[in-house]
View 1: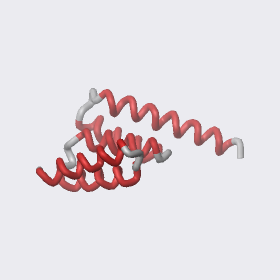
View 2: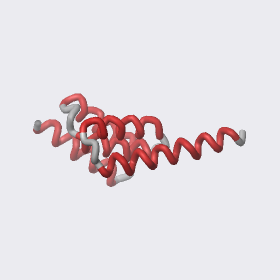
View 3: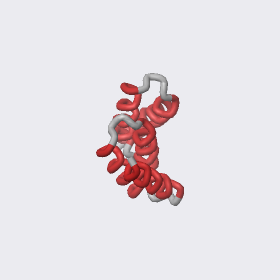
View 4: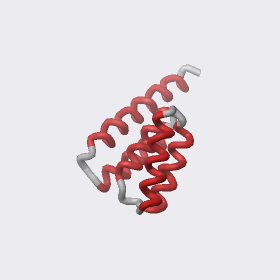
Length: 95
């Protein structure tokens, strides 16, 4: 559990520095240790949103909502992911 906390804190520090790829990697390592901790999924979803990886963000939020069906952050970030996917779809249609 100590390693999990350390990795999560390192991920949080990377987010604060705007290093979203590094943060997502730390959160992914956390998930190998505990698949039920929803905050690392919503945190990684935030990173994915910042990197315009909307499908990955949506998947993380979907996972959280299977565990906690009233997780507000998961609903909000999934909505942002859907919005990003719609914008991308419109832009692709214009090409």
